[in-house]
Structures are given as C-alpha cells and as structure tokens.
Image (cartoon, rainbow, N blue to C red; front, side):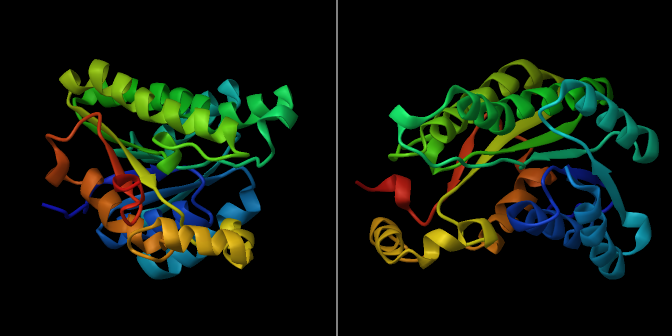
Length: 253
C-alpha cells in the first residue's frame, strides 16, 4: 500500500533540507524522482548522490524559478517531455524573511508571497491539467505551523502559509472529483541548515523546546513517513487536509 515503485515524483526545492529528505524518502519507497532547484549546479550535485544510491534511471533534474510563470511552464513541459507526467508533486520550495511588520517592505512581502504561495498555484495548475487527463495524481503542499499560528516578525510567511492551507482546500474542492488527492504537510520547528541560527539562539531554542510537547526540534526525517503516506495509495480517500508534523505544538496553548 505504501510502495511507490513505478511512480514518479517532482519535489521542488529538493537539493537540500526538507525537500531533499522527502525526495530521498520517496526514492527509498521506490519512486523515480525529479530533483528541482533554482541553481542548476546545486541540483546536479544532489542528483549525483541520488544516482549513486538509486540508479541513474530513477533520477531526473530540473532547474527553474518557481515564481516566474514562463519558467514554470517551460520547466514543467521539459519534465513531462523527458520523463512523463509526474504521479506526485511536492510543492516544497520556499523562503523566510524575518522583520517586524511595521518595518516590512512591500517588495519583501511580495517576494515571500510569490515564493511560498503563488508558486504552488503556478506549479499545481501546470501539473493538475495532465493529472486530470490521466485521472490520478497526488499533490502535497508544504505548509507550516504558521498555517495555523502566528508569531512576531514573520507576517509575510504567516500570511503565505495560511494561504497554503486554504489553497490546498480549494484545489481539493475542484480536483478531487477527477481522481486527484491534494493535501498539505505542516512542519513545526525543524532543525535544518536554514534554521541552525535559531537552534543556536539560546532564548529561541528554549522557547521552542518549552512550546513543543515533544520537547525537541523536529528533524527532516520526521516528515518522510507522512510524505510517503500522502504520495501512496494508502491516502486515496484523504483530501484537502493539513497534517501538522509539529510534536504537538498546535495541539496545546
């Protein structure tokens, strides 16, 4: 039921961090993967390691800017021409911008919203059409605990991730009848290269440990099992849901 052999998955932002861990997990479950990033050299470096582990035939690469509609269209078309229509899309790529709301520049607001929300619309729409024609497909949008909760200095990110939760619902409302399952994974505070500075901040680290019932930071591996589940036949009647992978943070006050 959880076997992904014969399936193909595109994971955006998969040259490092959460995206890479999810791509590895999908490959370990049997999937062929398309690694993606904006910097081709970084994607190819990750792909070389994947090919050594999983075989050259099960690893493809793609490099394009997820916020540029023309690049998205061209990138998705190239993927489909080279490898076919993905069975699974993981909309993972994103960024953060920390500044008090009153100091937030509109250009930075737009940059975060385009990257963390609008890109999901662009890529999701581009792949949903051929998935609908085929009659099947899995879309996994990566949200956050900020899909549910707010915290000072990350207003744009919070707005975007709240949008991810409702965009996931909207996609399911329109596409579920065509055989697609669209859901969201919402990580809590995950220890990655990008969050290392927060882990090193004694006050912030203490807050995370105290605010999380599991009393620890999450790891990228904590997201792999849920991603494999949502990518597999085991989740065929799950639609429009946001699954919080947060050690219980959103369950308590």
